[in-house]
Image 1 (cartoon, rainbow over the protein chains, first blue to last red):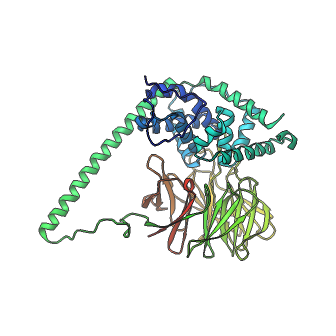
Image 2 (cartoon, rainbow over the protein chains, first blue to last red):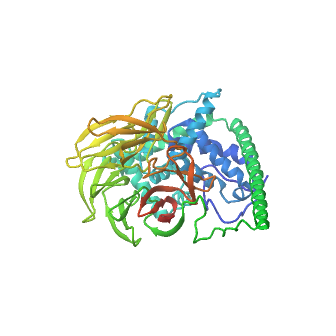
Length: 185
Length: 346
């Protein structure tokens, strides 16, 4: 196994750096470690667990095809997260994933999973109702614990822009959840 | 409770659920899918080799017979057969531009992150104005001498007067971008949709409700809600993305692959036709539909024949397209991740 370790929830460095700088970790190990967090990210942004699993699979498949290059990045997880965040906020790609999810479900053996509570679902609905970038920034920050710098690297935006999206996103969620302005501080 | 705390709690609960996922089973499925894709790619490569060999033999035989002239290869100055054309202008507009519409000799580009609509002169390619609209612009519609903008974060319709480049009216609009509950699936839709505009009416897709809302352009009053007929095959619901005013008023439904004609006298659907859109963009263009592939195919913009669903022409874009419009014989498209408006001439 290579010496590279990509922690779940950490994405320091550019997600698509120009050259491999680490020994390549076996793809399967990377997948088994990162899959749950990646699905959860897609789940929050798409609102459907089934679609989220398909979107995550698509992102990992893209990584698998280029694994000798992507696996050598400092944080290959950041690359996958950027892909899945963009896929989850693209209606077109989500519809394709939805179609695959239908096929998978009708093929049988759906695995039962607990559903989020009504209160939690309401919060994520409010996040998804935000503009695309704000939703991505809030989800990466709160769900995966990414710092402003890490989010800037994942989404290829400046830290100033990320901070602005974070602030506007919080205000937007607060407004949609009916929280008073003093609660937004 | 603060927003910060509500978000943190919601995140914690979702993280708890992720433990129930089974990555081992899904890893096996990924490997099988990867093998199938590799086999398909290999088969396509063999077919391409055979076609190239056949074409080469044909050219050689033609030369020998003295009857076939060898065509010049594709160059930047000459569009290749089957290509949408060549990019003749790249105009920086804003970060993450969304929809684009043409009208009054200008292109109107929605910039949701900046809260402005950028007006670009179609002839010179210069940015003429950046018009603050008081929210995040999403859908656009041009007609009857004005520009209408749907704000995706306020559920508001805004009218821009092209003579002054100012907002001259603001009306409540249909919900733009709330969660859509299709029973089993919860889908969130926030794509640039297209508003149909006439002197008498605005026809605005209500994407979450799966309906078309008719609005009085003078008063902002909601005149009617047009319900689309139930699809013949079981489907989660309608997903209307565009209303086109031309040969009648047509609303597209990318979920069922149908376009519905609305009679403005009765506000009812009076006809339907099939539009085959494998992965629609704005789902109803001027005389063709637009689709895009990516990222596996490197973001390819395709012009799709509405009747047959066949790709008529294509253009490798490299990045995701936000919107497409036609004006003055050219195609204009926004490239979301590059912040530009591209002009493509056939």
